Image (cartoon, rainbow, N blue to C red; front, side):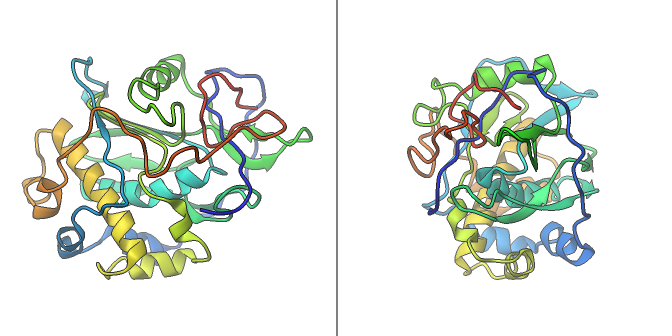
Length: 289
């Protein structure tokens, strides 16, 4: 990890500011195909990796459902480098259970830790699955306002904000409470901050990252796919182990090991910037715009 540090905050629902008009570009078909059609053998060969943090398992929580299906909620921000890293694995894992549409391309902030990490955006994305329902929020766009803050892109609902406040707390993430991205798998498994260090993406194009995903010995692929194995195991936990071909595969079975508390891949990675905005997290009280 290198570069300057700007924190990326998780603000309350309805924070001051106006939703921004952001430019958007569709992810190239070739990249989407490479990311959403990984051979099963790659997942199984990669398995778990020591540099990848395990998700946190929850006990005794009311199930999260959307439209009658087990619900998966993702919250990130377009400029956030940790979100940039986690999106690769999130797209890959969810593609094993359904199909994506309207994925966009994006890069993290140029002036933050791990700058210009190449990735996707979920700002217009939709997802369809017979097993689970997915909702995504990119709370900040890449457009900077005159005060240096990033403009609000998609606001959280009050219910979504409650999920964030409850499950990104120090109770579950003692070293990094409130970090983005936040991912909730049915109120059974949660993630806060990326599962692996975004620095591994430094200097790589989207085309390079996607093309290397077929090589289970590539270091970047190992971090991304090991994360995708954890996410796949989380989905299998909430959807009744469907489909069997995925949920009973060696890579997923070997990744069904979660923790009660997570200290992340690294400690103290973000701090609040001078202008007071936090775009990687580290607090549940900062504003979104």
